[in-house]
Image (cartoon, rainbow, N blue to C red):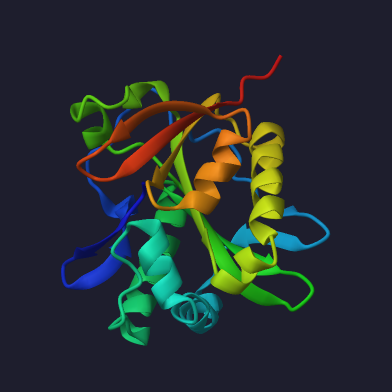
Length: 216
């Protein structure tokens, strides 16, 4: 799963990993970055600098739930606004460099940040572990939603919106969904979809699902 790691003393997403698989193209200069996806209940849009404080309060409001579900060792009880600012700055830099893309999930009814979606290259260690062939995938996609959002079944809306968006607006053919073994909500979503289980890493306690986006 794209994990949040302690790097240089701050908490950041695994998007900062330096070595990525290149066999399946993650991004080309001629491609256009999709700007948003929306449904009657949700808006998914690029993260902005002005979102930093709202984002922090969103995930910290579900800190225990997210920490237990995601398997990212994040968010910590000790997470701070300063660490969050550094994380947001990293996401914005990655957007500029087209090396990874972070989107916020907005509950349209309440105009509230309730989650995030991360599009990143598949880390090289995926293939090195022997669990999956990382070079077959264009991107690795992960997300989180707050506990109230999950309780309101917004995870179902988000997943449907996400896969429709991937098919209609993104240039990839094959993506990887990593998920922690104990994240039963996301596992249930994936197993009831057309995603295909392709392996499990017992050391990191992760499952991996392949999703085909090939267009006719």
